[in-house]
Length: 275
Image (cartoon, helix red, strand yellow):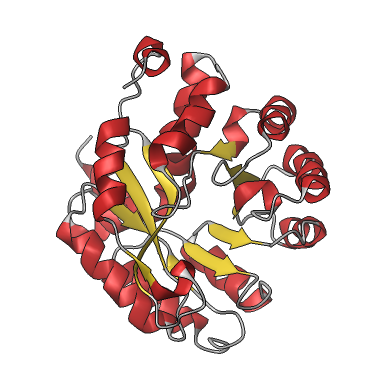
């Protein structure tokens, strides 16, 4: 660990909110071929990243891919959470059953959608509202759409990764920064953001409560991505929000419901009877 990291106050648990895992079924690139975790987890251990939120690799059948991610989560539920990957076109009419299986059967706590597959749909937003799930939606630079769905679904939280463009579209990232500041239900993550000053501007304008730490692992080095957050030199409380608190807050409703259904957390009525 370098001197800068040692000098920073410790965060109880650092959560990578954006890491892919499991096999794809294509050969376009690593993103749809395989997302192995061995090297990634070793690097997380070295960097002090204790938990990871997993997303499937691109796949032609996200039911299959989500089940594989579910097996990884079940192997170490103290280390892993996951979001259900959904294709808005191919899974049309089946989103509710796909997400219900992921949330109730596999313990997932959010939805992942990618513009590469298809644009976000009202069906997905309706299901997210029903299950009280955040949606991680990669808009691939189409940031103006965030104005539409954030306004139409003010009770659904949307995480737009990469400040709106993994492709390093500076104009899209700047435009999204304004939307991030204007809409209380829009959030972003730090994964793959290469223009550091744009990230600084986003945190200053929208506040640290709107930004989640993410790596887009296993293909990007988690220690390198974490150092970007350290270099923001935020106050300890603000840094803790980015590194864990914001993710926990956005996923808290569904995680509490899962604990209640498992009997590990009493229902509100039962809790009141014992007070």
